Every structure is written in C-alpha cells, then in structure tokens.
Length: 68
Image (tube, one colour):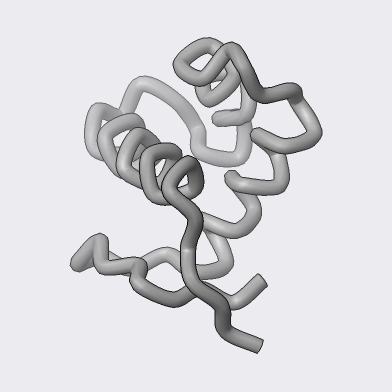
C-alpha cells in the first residue's frame, strides 16, 4: 500500500543518497550515520527509515509516494 512520504523521511532519504554516492559507508550499516545526522531520532526509527529507503530506492530520487 502506497502512502505519502513524510518530511523527515524525505530529508533522511536525501541524506542516504548523499551517503551512498560518497561511498563512505556500506548502506546496510547506515543506521548510525542517520542517527549522527538526525540526533533527535532513535536507532529503531532510523533503522526503519533505512529499510524504507532500501525498499523504495529510486535512482532518480523522486519519492512522492512510498510503500511501507
């Protein structure tokens, strides 16, 4: 079922694209990077967003709606 992406998810997805393109991290281990960049969010939430990003990954970076 598709839904609208939230503002924070959109920001985190954008950060994950930057991180991926930099090659600085294996994306399966990106949760701590999200926590570092978005310290108001806990490990569980960051892990969930990372999973959403992986499941909805788009090379063109357009995420108006996501599954999850």
